[in-house]
Length: 345
Image (cartoon, rainbow, N blue to C red):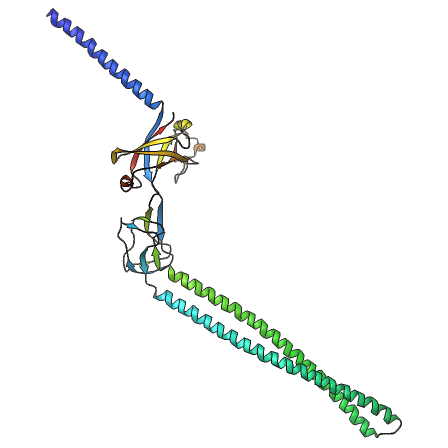
């Protein structure tokens, strides 16, 4: 009995010493790690997600993709019935043809009016010559009638001829002025017609643009998700149809406590562990910091001025660029939970 008691008295201290040693080793190891790293498990995979919305409304004629499949940038994914848009384009083209024909008519009018202007100018010159002649005749007859060399009747005829020539000259001048103004009016009408053609061209460009919107293309290369469209469905302009997770846009958003940010710098090395693939280690670096806390950016941010203030440690979203292998990158999806460890030594 005495020997057994001695053995028990020896075993218990040994066990306690072993446990104490293990605790010391574990504590030193943890202290050594956390003195050089800042960790958080409040992190997730993120990526650039491009929502695709309809620019015009219409019935869906065809769908050229399957959900959760890869598509290339510019690939036509959805085709809308474009019959109405083709008709509008034809109407715009017909309107431009009519406007062009109107310009041709106005140009013909300008040419004819310019020819009339030349004729009117010649008539003015002829009337001026005739007026000069009748004025000279009138002056001679006025001198001759004084000394009785001609009859009063001859003088009256010369006077009437002069007045008639004056009236004809004035009429020719008025006609010339009117034709010049008509040319100006026709040129103004031509400018208006040309502006109408430009407007019709704008209508054509707009109709072509609307027609092009009936082909809904992938905004970027990536994987299609959140499909919300079916063949034959009537969609409206602005309606969300699906989203594309862009290739090569995967990164990590880690929400560190504000008390952890003191030693985290831009460019700090980061080791990321994805919960779904715990054996795969991903290297990365801190890229930038959010300008606001997560709570401040929420739909209903807290207002500490209400009087019911309870101090809560806030978290700051930190963007981390990662460099996974191609095989792992193909497996990562936005929203996956990860653990981020930032090296601060």
